[in-house]
Length: 264
Ligand SMILES: N[C@@H](CCC[C@H](N)C(=O)O)C(=O)O
Image (cartoon, rainbow, N blue to C red; front, side, top):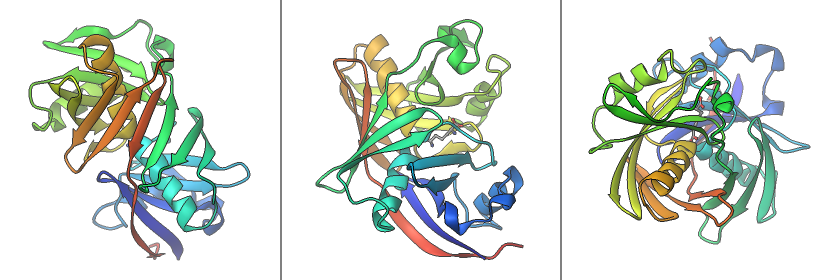
């Protein structure tokens, strides 16, 4: 029996466990995939292990693959740490595979996270050459490392059916380590709509790092403002690119459940 909690950030949902709740020997891709299965498991887009001393977020995708960071996940991780009395300060640092991230708890209960600088160095995305305004079957692709690998594509309707084209780009041989694919609609210069096909998961209702990558490319390439509100299918995030080029994300995290998982 595994004690677990479940949270979501704008509809991106996660099973979250403290490291002391799990048998370390059990952690492998198929165990995580079984827990995240929406029919025979708890069901989630991702699985998060909370480690302490130092505070660390270990993130796995739904298919059990490890990812360096998760924007919605780190807000949910932070709410878990408050709920479980692991932290009691208004700001704190979290170690991730994409480096240390600083989280600020806001008066309205939302979380602001410093995602740091986007990295356009091709090697960070396992690319040999840049993919930037790159033609792919008539779509223009912009690939960057925004705490994880992201590709941004501007479209007329972000909420169209992206399953097929998202999977095709994600798994294209252009991307040796695959890519998350963000379909971005510019509503006006302060407002975007975004839908994401995530590596290791498929279409999700929201992707925090993807929204940060989308805002950054919209600001750099499309004349959008440095402060943007981004709407997804079940929520919205506020993104700011500061004067040093760092990307900040502000948004909610919601507790859904706490329970016991009976492993088969
Ligand atoms: N949903 C996340 C991103 C999760 C990781 C991603 N699928 C990857 O493999 O890089 C977010 O909110 O940022």
